[in-house]
Length: 99
Image (cartoon, rainbow, N blue to C red):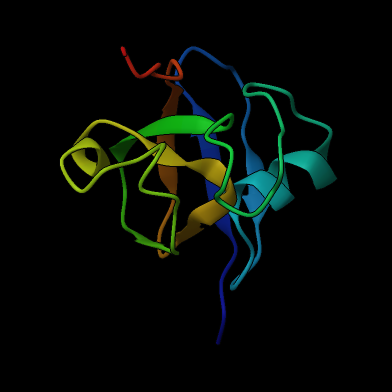
């Protein structure tokens, strides 16, 4: 039996469903929600950064230019997050690289 995960962004009253194998970003777009901006949808641009506050997930590959291994504790890309349970998320700011 497969179950839908419910995705809730911190401070929002309602969440949206995410199907098994679906990314948070794809589910967000399907539901018409807009808590984070949408970019390339493939983990390469770093625009859809989120923090996972609660819940279990699997993370797909992301560009190291936008999310280093150390950054993974602070922020992931919604286009590469696959929920394994209900998730509570927080939009995260895109970090810029200083020259």
